[in-house]
Image (cartoon, rainbow, N blue to C red):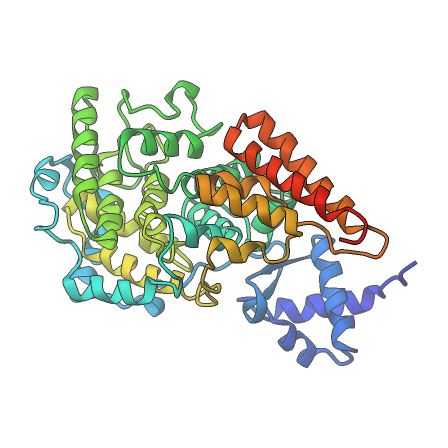
Length: 457
């Protein structure tokens, strides 16, 4: 049984954390304590305080910071973090005015009509080239979605947390990780906040799992909205459906379209325009600009645009846009600049900075993918024969799901018994799929295993 931690030691740690408004690192806490003890001792005590709900942990690794539980997590400082052009600064000054001081405006279809794919550009050629340089991972040419699948766990947490944070969600990064990994909802947080994050997880998994099929079409975007809006809308029938009600935007002088027929026509035009754009970064930014401006759904429009912006990244095996450290207030004001002035300058600066920032955590890039045959070098001979035969006849899509990596060989487990078990397991699964070609491969491998099992072989 673990010895109880003296309460005085825990209170001393809390007192140190209270002196750091932006959160204290473990090193700062150790330096300030009169008797910090061994490093593992301090880590154990910090973990106990977090588990007890007395401290809150944000960040990861060297960026980890401990906060008092009731302390608000500070927003990133926009003015210090993101360099703004003179045009962006002027636009920011305008949208910071009270709503009553800003000119009421409605939806201007000319803003969409005036965009010509591959002729009109929101991003300059130099900006697109820079994004391509920092966003291309060091992997061999592979199928769409390969890179996103390799970093899926990290993508789920980073994008789900940051996108939810931009909507005012108060879950911390650690809270989000626990929710997604273990299904543990954070104490003192509303059910809708957990639902928002879980919806993001479902939507991201949908995009990655269907990388070959997703695109800027009705099927993808309506399904994306359905997943993000699940259990969050007042009208359940509005999930995955275009808007047929009048909506307003808090804190804005912008009035979205009201006629359902016009909303549908503009939505189809928006998707056709986006699909025709050749550059993935221009495509992503176009959707971030035009989709929230149209407000095609009852709610969740910005959420849909943020995840839809990752469609070209996933398909082209580029680093995803996870909106790491993007200040929520600046992002909101940048979208107001689109709504009220049709000015992309501020959102463009946010987008460029956000993508470079998002690529940072992904810099520990995975090794290049290897050919299919190399993935099975540790298989038993029979399993390798099955994989090779299926791959030759039907391609990787047929063989890969049916071959499992066997457990390490032990002296208690004869080689033949193990091979036959792998064959029987594969055979059972293939029979359910009625794959006659694979069954022939199984039959050939079975005969080979029987020959090898004879005495003296």
